[in-house]
Image 1 (cartoon, rainbow, N blue to C red):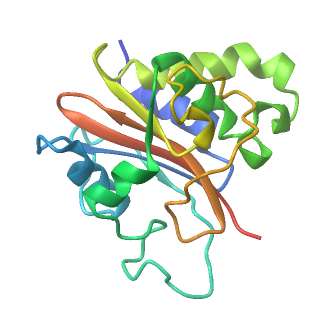
Image 2 (image 1 turned 90 degrees about the horizontal axis):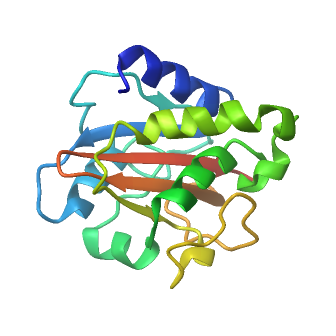
Image 3 (image 1 turned 120 degrees about the horizontal axis):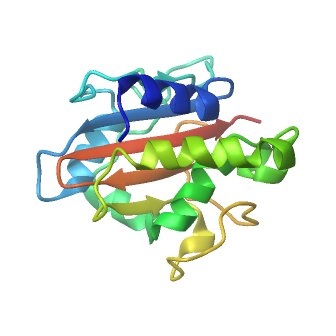
Length: 185
């Protein structure tokens, strides 16, 4: 079972060195998209008090208007930009976000690090109950919950203030999480 120390270790293994965002908030509403929007807007904190990461690149102006890396989204707008995926593609994408252009092939020494990176991915996902739902903005997942997202050749419905972004949203009965990476031309 994941605890605060193993969570932090896994989080920093995958998201400690790039333009990334990893944050969990409470699930308070039947419409989980409201809770995800609150996490993206930095309006809530981790209900367990565990570490989060916000290493989004600085830009010359606050395009979000809220000091957060994401645009303010309504629940309806989020629904249009997120596609449901199964656990396996979610685990793949959590790793791939570490690579250049959100691809595992862009991770230096990926083959030798693959096992430890996937261990970190599974550690992160173990926080959430088995009935959790997973979503991404990678269009390759549109209509294909089991898309291979380790090296996606896809487009993204960008949700941030940056030119390109990709991520995973996790929704459990009690928590929601946003794991994201950004690219700015």
